[in-house]
Amino acid sequence: MSAPTTPLPGALAGLAPLLDHYGYLAVALLVLLDNCGVPVPGQTILVLASVYAGAGHLDFAAVLLIAGVAAAVGNSLGYLIGRTGGRAFVHRWGRYVLLTPARMERADGFFARHGGKVVTVARFVDGLRQTNGIIAGTTEMPWRRFLPFNLLGAALWTGVWGTFGYLAGANIGAVYRTAIRYQLWFAIGLGVLVAAFLLRQVLRYRRRRRADADADAGPGPDSGPGPDAASHEGSDRP
Image (tube, rainbow, N blue to C red; front, side, top):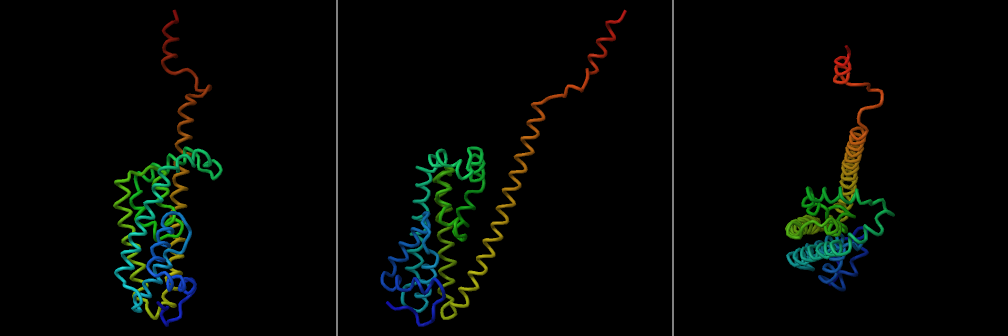
């Protein structure tokens, strides 16, 4: 197999020899590792394989099927890693990365409410794509709930990026640079939203603690006797 005659940009050019030698196996391995916590260019190899398919060097349906299965299996492995060892890791090392039991409890609650949405869209964000399965397992998201969202996310991710590479064809250089730029802005926007959500949670937590402290303190020493005490004193007078 040989690379398309169109010059490939950036990371795509670096991965071309790997795809030339190993074809579908390279797609399966890199996508699987990328989805179970290993920082390898799984998304890039998916785009490159789709460009090859558009040039007639690979079968596009096979690329999508292999990448989709590898993404789902990789995320499932991440889930098993989190489910079997995530809690023990948090209990032993969490304090060194500011992951206290209280924060872990809030993470559990967040995933209980929004875990399905996170697992579905996380693949489109570098960092979350590699870790969302591990986080879902660590927060003990039920497997029966995790699995359908995992499959949905894998299908959407491979479909979007595979179609992108296939249709880009000869314009892959310009289209790839544009996509990377928009992906960066998307990641920044998502980061701002996450930071705003965390700030809101911190402020709510502090207000709740302040209210609990005020309730525990009770009336102050200068509050004086109540009206019942005054009426009682008056009734004792001759």
